[in-house]
Each structure stands twice: as C-alpha cells, then as structure tokens.
Length: 446
Image (cartoon, rainbow, N blue to C red; front, side):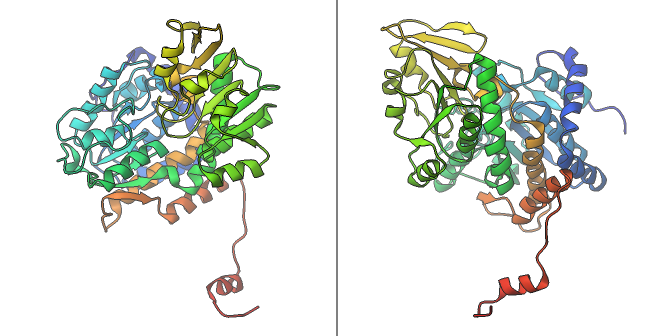
C-alpha cells in the first residue's frame, strides 16, 4: 500500500504529526477489541468506498477508530465535537500521516467550529458519527448553513418539521454517542424531520457500563483534580444527575473520601441513590452544603442564580454533561461584581457582591475532556468497537432501517462484551442444554 493520499485539512500545526503518532500508538496498545475488529476490516473491506463524516472528540482514541474505519475501505473526514478536547498533535498525525481530512484545532472559536461542520456536511457523507448530533443536525438544515450548531444553545430538536434536508439525501445512517444528542434526534424524529436511521450507541449495555459509569466516573474527577488540585477527602461533592455517568462520579468521589450528595428529578434514580447510601435532596438545599458541584444531566440550567446565591466561598463548579449549558454562566455573570479572574489555567473565579468567590472550571465545558484526557483508552475501546460494528451493520444490512433512533443490535452488544472479556483473560460459563430448554418452557416443570 502506498503513501496516504493528501486531503484538505485545517489543523494547528502539521509539525506535531510525529508526536501525535506516538500518542495514537500508546492508545492503540490499550484497545485490543478495536484492534481485532480492525484486523477483520482490513481483510474484508466491508466499508469500501463509503463516505464517513465524524464529529467526535479529536483524541488519540478517536484516531484509532478513524484508522479502523479507513482500514475497512471508508473515506473518513473528522472535525471536533469539543474545541477544548482537541489534541493538536493527534489531528496533525491523522492529517499528515494518514491523509485524513481533519478540521480541528484546540481552542477554536464557534465560527470556526461551525465552518468545520459545514465543510464536512458539504461532502455529502453516507454515514455520520456524532457526539452531540451537531453534524447530523447540520445535514438536516433546509439551507447550507449550520443553524447554530456548536453550542447546543438551541436546545434539542434541530431542523423543524417539514424542512427539506440540504445534505441528508445521501445518508444511509448515523450513530450517536451521547444522551444529549439522542434527545435532540428523538425530538427531530417526533417532528418528522429525521431523514435517516440513527443507532443509539450511547444506550448499549456495554457502553453504559464502561463508558458512562467507569469512564466518566474516573475522568470527570481527574479533570476536576487536575484543574484545581483540590483535596476531595473531607469535602462535600454534589452530583446533579444520577444516571449511569452520575453513578460513576458519585462512586469515585466516595472512594476518594468525599461526602456525596445526589440531586435528581427522577424518583426512581433518586431512590437508587438513597439505597446506595448517598444523601438525596433538592439542588437548592444542596447548594448550601456543597464544596464541589458536578452536573451530569444532559439538560440545561441545572445550576442557576438561585443556587449560586446560596453557595459557600470557594465553591467549585464543573460540568460533565456534553454541552456547556448545564451551568447557567450568564446567570453567574449577572450575579458577579465584574468579569471573572483566571486564577488557574482552567479556573475562572467569579466574585459576588458579598465577597464570596465561585470557581467555574473549563468555561462550563465537559470537564473530563477540557481539563483532563477524557475516558481511558481501555474504556473507549468498547465505545469505539460499538461504533465500528454499528457502522458496518448500517452498510451491509440488507434491509434498511427506517428513519428514527434504533438500539444497538443485541448481537453487536454481546459480541463487544465477549471480545472485551477475552482481552481481559476472563472466561464465563455457558448455559447447559437443559437450562436452555428450561428457559424456553412455560409449564410447571421443576
């Protein structure tokens, strides 16, 4: 195979390619499941000639996925789902070393971000991979613009009912990695605006257990500690949202010695948190008790002015949800006596009229990527294995799925779980013939 074909790219510094290649190699060494899939893709070429566009976090782990898809025959273009998550050396390695169309730069502004998404949308992809649904929403806009993609500020929904998608005609299907993105896409489908099937990778059993619980649980606290060097032991950490990711954050915080309070709107999740031994209370009450606050809801305005007004001096505010809308930054600005002071590289300190100081991390963006390195490669191994196999299923499945949001096929979920166990050297039992027969029976046999 010859050198990669050069394609258009917009990156910070092509000279970082060698450093990026080393970083990708390190990640690949911890992703054995995706490596097995990559070997098969390279031999079978199931994605031959497919145009794939991905709006994902541009990290070393994502680079391993991009190489897997390209090895299967696809032509892949990549832009960043979060400007603060982009690893410039990885972008350079993919663009210069692999010939991938990469449009991503660490710290890019919203206009640049929107331009990058528009460029990928203009390529008329057949498959999209999204982390927040911005790319797929852009493809469904009635005009060529991106319609505000990038901040999530427009809320779930995207294109309205009856809109004629500008770039969706070529779409075979898509995958979505986040709860926030799936909320937007389900709203689009309800309004009759979603033109293709979407595989809900975020809702696979293996994804929720490893990525959300263990990945977010570890990486969110990693980001908070890196940004602040705060000692969690002896402090009170408030988790707002007790889904899979919130459970992971609460579990890791308790393991680090913090007292944990959970705030929820779902009675069943709140009950789960209470039965797990956490204090459960409304956010307005927790505001007076917490030292560190972590939003993990996928919603907006979770921490607002009324909460800020009750927080103690030195409180730390972090978001581990996808978009930067969970903490009401404008409400914080309105309460403060003036512009924030940058007291550490990723800490903006807002001073209130009574002298209390509130510390916002990473401008309210997802803290585990903006302040740390995101999920460990061993976790992303599972997430991206699901992505790769979901893409393959969309391409080779003889019957086309109808537009809408669909679960990851059970056989894919189980196969990824099996491969991960094998990579860990773990064996499990198989049911006996008698047990299988018993499962299929419905009589009163004992």
